[in-house]
Amino acid sequence: MPSARLRRSLAAATALPLLALVATACGYGSEADDGDKASKSPVAAGAKKLSASSVRIGYFPNLTHATALVGIEKGLFQKELGATTVKPSTFNAGPSEIEALNSGSIDIGFIGPSPSLNGFTQSQGKSLRIIGGSASGGVKLVVNPKKIKSLDDVEGKRIATPQLGNTQDVAFLNWVAEKGWKVDAQSGKGDVSVVRSDNKVTPDAYKSGSIDGAWVPEPTASKLVSEGAEEILDERDLWPEKKFVITNIIVSQKFLSEHPDVVEAVLRGSVTTNKWIKDNDEAAKATANDALKKLSGKALPAEQLDPAWKSIELLDDPLAATLQAEADHAVKAGLLKKPQLKGIYDLRPLNKVLKAEGRPAVDDAGLGVK
Image 1 (cartoon, rainbow, N blue to C red):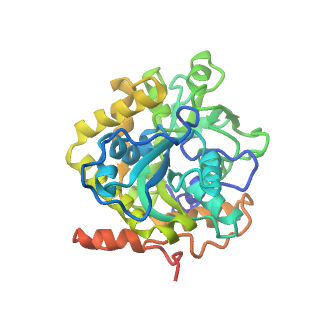
Image 2 (image 1 turned 45 degrees about the horizontal axis):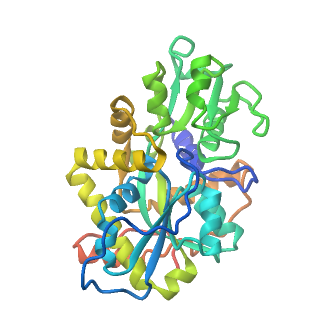
């Protein structure tokens, strides 16, 4: 069993340092797609238009964004929004999605916790609010079983992470430190060699033998396993209750202030979608894969899709306490200046939706607006 100290240290795993090279928490998918196209779901005749004629929603073509993939593909967001049109945009990096939110190119986004922290702190708390959760889990350490047979064998090996300072990079660096090994964070050199490798390139690096393993999100982890790697650590096992936030829902503060009815409708769509996914697991998995194929040009084969899907838990709770832990431990690691996170959450619209469903409220861990 991992020590409590290890679990606490891994809380920094998804914290995004304020580095110029920061990447997305998910980091897998197609290039950003201009969000000026409407949802394919037709607006019902006579449907009521809310306070905005449209809402621009950003997300990644990634299984950890399955709520958005399925909800938009099935028209579940559009159904809640009535005559207010959904205009989706896809991104492959957290910073670009935050930039789009700040510029007004999108209004609401599904995004990892690290870019959320970064966007909020860099704007001095003025750019965004986290209004809901979407997913937990979906990150694994997979290795070449001929070279690494136990966690201790990672010492001296070459392990890939998606990018310097990104969520999984920080996770691995902290895990390495807990093992008592020394690594220079910037160069990646030390008792373990940390190789920064784009998720789309990592499988080829593994096949060529230039890396011995990788600490990566899904579906990259399952792709590596399908090519001979073995999973030796699921990050969920390092967290209390096996939960840590991997995808949030954020909104620009301006849009939230001007169109609270639209925000509430999007959250109803998210809650409805997550419930549909849980009630229709196989159909939801197929729908998500269909959406991935349309967005990235290629569906995931079953040997990658099935294990990746199982490792991700979709939920409405943003797991705010884990975000606070992430920030605290990133600060202790010297990767983040102590941030002021008060007000990063506004869960009042979500809790209103949950109350209407007869469900309990979710907690903001003391980081909500007054």
